[in-house]
Length: 103
Image 1 (cartoon, rainbow, N blue to C red):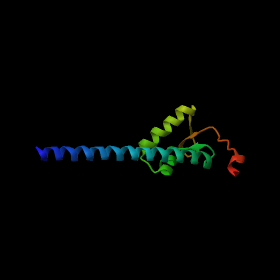
Image 2: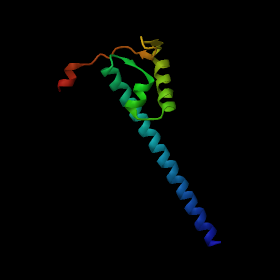
Image 3: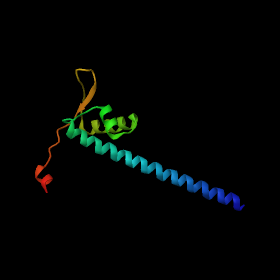
Image 4: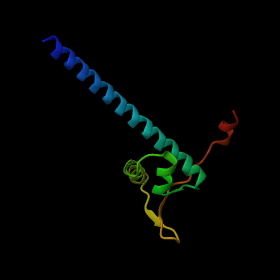
């Protein structure tokens, strides 16, 4: 019986570790997406494409698409197409408080 209990404890421990690792990875990817999104807003004059966000955040395309779709829905942004036929989204301009940046 002791062997079964040891195997059970090891299995539960490994599963708990994997769940913790997975949750940690998801939080890190969400932070990468959020940071990249706002950096791109500033750098790209509030125009962002899926490929830009994916490359900047270095995450999988489906995850970046899900994040971008949520932002598009929250801001009520419509897709636009550039001269090359690439789709991008023009978000509201960021207004920076330059007085607080100096402090």
